[in-house]
Length: 156
Image: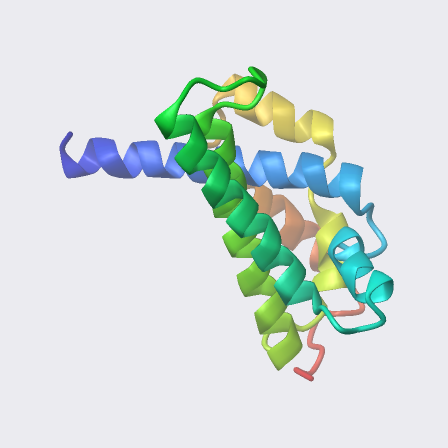
């Protein structure tokens, strides 16, 4: 595979992950707090296990699943190695965003997440091939943020 083909495949994979995380985040957390499902571990353990540690646990679960799927056929047929690797990649991005937010370098992430396009738009874009890397998503989010109260907000 030459570099151009690799980069095209990489862009397509990034877009697939963006669509996946948008769908799953709506199902798991909703629009009020993008980390709602991850923060549950802190509540259940009275703060002994952090949100970041909860994300790491999910990542280790995915690593173990990949190792198992490479070693033998899956009993559960509706989650492939590709699905598991995508989940792992998305979890690593979620952890990075969470850590950035904790350091104050991702000001307003919880408020920004709802500006993602609706599921139908994501799916249409994916099926229609209009975007391979998420640029159109960032463009739409940027347009929606022009009048946001977060515009010009100071870093925490």
